Length: 290
Image 1: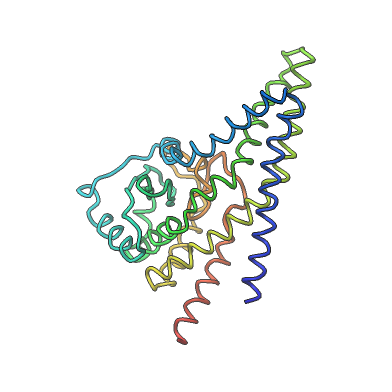
Image 2: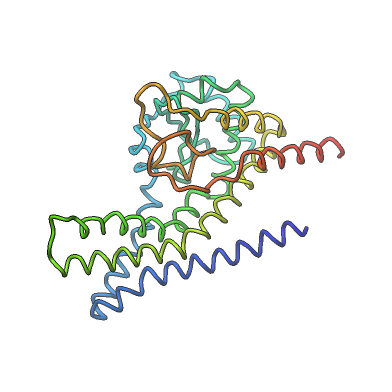
């Protein structure tokens, strides 16, 4: 019970910081722009998270060159995904595959647009029971609408990262315009402040939802040892693939474990694997004593 209260308190504080991040995101518009233009810009900005929720799954799949596959291509996988979806009480999502040696999986979209994506490295690395556990983990994310939640929570961080990268042009030694330098400097400072306020709550919420998806997977399969074994196997892969495959960095926040290599990764979005495994072992011991 104390753990539940502690987690609840951390989530409330995190949501407070997320709200502060959105306010900080909008405040400069009203400081530097006329009121009417700032209001219009705020409305336009408000539509961006909605568009990401509606079409984010397409962006995610395109970012890693994922390909939708048919039941004829992977009949066993489709059968397992359908069976576990029924056990989870959710509609069977579409299945996509990434040609990557990095063994991993992630879920994108929600409702009719939901898709579970696995890498060819994952299919080669895990056995059938471990694959079931990974599917169950991803289906638990669907149950909890985690893709939508994390899109909303992480939007200020996404904007901050974009501002940070965009401000780079102002410090190009080939440029000499003072105005451009000042604008770039302001953008850099705003992005850093936005990251400082918005990133810590993203870590809290992301970690909490990973633990919740682990528990949800156990509820679906009844096999905590299978998920623990899968996590252990995936965690031991720490070398860059030999073949030149697309990095999973752009979707690292949605992966079951942090990708083993690649750029565009934000650190700390997944709990330590050892802690996840220990919690799964605790669930297994509790199940044995019931």
